[in-house]
Amino acid sequence: MSRVFGDQVLLLARRSVLRTARQPANVAFPLVFPLLLLAVNSGGLNAATRLPGFPTDSFVAFALAIPFIQGALFATMNAGTDLARDIQTGFLNRLALTPMRGVALLAGQLGGVLTLGVIQALVYLGVGLAVGVRPESGPLGILVLLAFAILVSVGFGALGAFAALRTGSGEAVQGLFPLFFVFLFLSSMNMPRNLIEIDWFRFVATANPVSYLIECVRSLIITGWDGEALALGFGIAAAITVVALTLASVSLSSRMTRS
Amino acid sequence: MRTLSVAVAVASRTLRTVFTNPSLLLPSLIFPLFFFTAFAGGLSRVQDVPGFDFPPGYTAFQFVFVLLQSAAFGGVFTGFGIARDFESGFARRLLLAAPNRTGIVLGYAIAALARWLVTAALLTVVALVAGMQVGGGPVDLFGLYGLGVILNIAAILWAAGVAMRLRTMQAGPLMQMPVFLALFFAPVYVPLSLLQGWIHTVASVNPLTRVLEAGRSLLAGSPTEVFVAFAVAFALAAAFWLWAARGLRSAERAG
Image 1 (cartoon, rainbow over the protein chains, first blue to last red):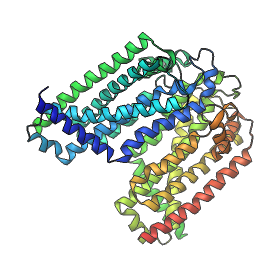
Image 2 (image 1 turned 90 degrees about the vertical axis):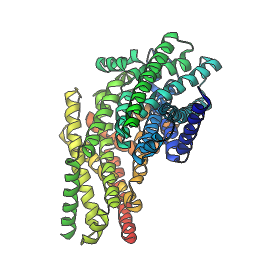
Image 3 (image 1 turned 120 degrees about the horizontal axis):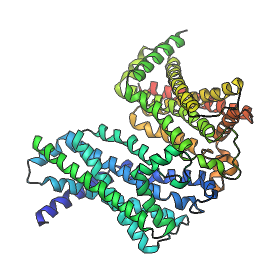
Image 4 (image 1 turned 60 degrees about the vertical axis):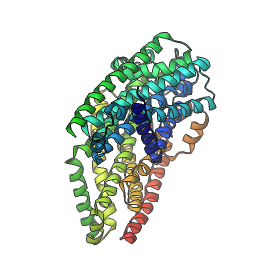
């Protein structure tokens, strides 16, 4: 990576972080809402831990994985909406007139998402530890969890960027939110897949990649080191990241060519 | 009479806007169905938790929550429309034109109710098709839907009060979040008796818990605390009527 390219990425990443930080709602909502849902679900569903075969006696520990994925979904929306605003306000057009490389724009944008993703992950982890959750995988597991949070943030951030570059509309990006919400709720977020009673729901949850992202985080917290869950989680997150980055790069090229 | 004519005009305009605009109509139809599917489908094993006792089953248990949730959010979604009317300047022209401004609030409330009745009908059909067991008779069911109607009216009056004070779409989260919290701090997934710790304490003092538990008892055909639930629902509606009326005064003062 040349120094000029690095400077471009840093400048745009700084802009992305500052822009997010200047909109408190964009920072507070992705942090607070998943924690609120965690509180509600873990309080309301704690009785489910008495089901035979439930993998832990603490629903908070079971559900702590959800905010990590939900936070990443919010990051997707923020990243996509900000980039769409850059397109709508003509910032991208002006950028196209400079020597700035398109890849630097994408990398910078994702740098901002990644920063927010790390902050979110640390907050969720801190809240979990504060309420007595002790990850079974230990300190090394926490590092793996943070690495996974970064990968997922970049992957979903790239999806948001792709949606923004493809449509050029913040509203269209926001319109993806319910879709992501559907993926989240039709997963194993509230019940282990083997305990889901309704056949079609278990089938959907098994086919839903979000289930494996959640189960990867969950395994580090309540199981310890589960190679299969980790491989599936990291594999799917990496695949989402590669596909989304490729699509975003292609869309960026055509968007900047058109400009 | 003047109040009624204003109310009818506002209600028909609001309903026309909602029913001719899929982006406004579909979320209020789809979200309840989605929540119903996710909760009743994904969590049905919860009925096997020791101490869970609801004879019609978990689908019916969740149906009542989603029905009442859709009633509350039907009111909130209509509140978004009021805020939009203020942002676009339409509401200000309405304030000038209406001979009786109380009719404006009444009109929005009628629209919210009509909108929810469509959602409730769709949700009920889907639940019955999904095999929901109903233990209650017609009078019990009338009581259940009656609770929904009052909750819907309370929610639109709450949202109208916020919208008329702040007069911007940015007030959306402020309309939505307290309703969301009040609903989810009730016994959503299991009966109150199975909740433990802080959530049990919060749910015990949450007025919507009475409404939800009475609604479930009506669907099961073994009504309990129905009088308390109706009293709570009416009290909420009356309090939010005052809130909305003062919001209207605030909007009038702002000109």
